[in-house]
Length: 345
Ligand SMILES: Nc1ncnc2c1ncn2[C@@H]1O[C@H](COP(=O)(O)OP(=O)(O)OP(=O)(O)O)[C@@H](O)[C@H]1O
Image 1 (cartoon, rainbow, N blue to C red):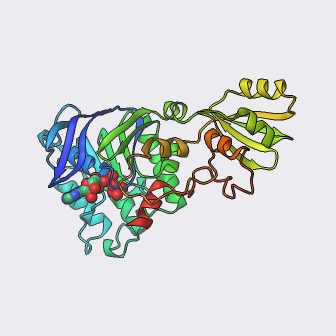
Image 2 (image 1 turned 90 degrees about the horizontal axis):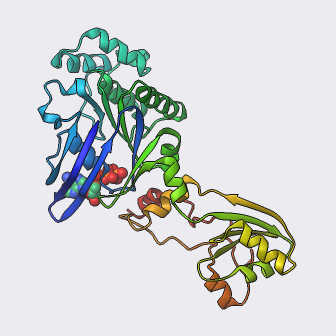
């Protein structure tokens, strides 16, 4: 278990982590999700005793990392900065690490096997691809057979097969009752891997909940509506708090109203509706909604395809597909926030 209490880190005038309190429980994969610069790596470095907190505390199985007699057996980590001597082979690197922690050589062979490094274990690390380097980092993290595993952006640089492998590995580790804490800026990745999410933005916790709760709690319920009179129906439904998008001819997406209300309005006004489908927010949308105020670097996202009732009322009519050329892309740029930020850096 990892427990952070009012954990903060300030670098000069930059507050990287701003008093976070959370618990990472064993037996499940906890995702640590946030845009670039949110404070994920800094938090993980403090968990591993590599950075001293400016305020607050963080413990691993009840003790700060540095207090553990054999920390590698308690917690294994893959952090962004890898310190591997490039002239060493994967095998000699892991052996040296094992030797300094009293770990038998048989465990070195085991983790090489587990991480699929068998074929390259005797090759020099300097020739390793990013993906092989990530696997070696994970092998090192697992060397002490630790109860707690912390991985900072573990799928970075991995090919699809590698991504799948990490996904299955972390799920397996959690199923064995270990505490697994995994950072990523990609919601798509987290949605397929984590059971529980801690979302961080600008150094603060924005959400700490099971994935399902984050999905249910974010954004308004939307309904897909097919009608032969989309403009008339949009005009009838338009009011404060209601958002209507024209997705294509005869297809609207309505937020802020229950399907029953939409049906009643249509019925009262003699408008034919031939589909009413409740839509759940995608995890991606939930994430964008959660972090919209907490992205450190942001390019202006066009408010594409999004028309509020107020706008519709001002225009005197509902938006049409023609006036809304990007209406099929409700998140605007379609980029993950981090991609938007990268472009801006
Ligand atoms: N050693 C440092 N000195 C000064 N500022 C730092 C230092 N380390 C991190 N920061 C700043 O603290 C903030 C949080 O950085 P951190 O690396 O923890 O974020 P992150 O969520 O891991 O982001 P990324 O996904 O980009 O790695 C950023 O604004 C970063 O520039």
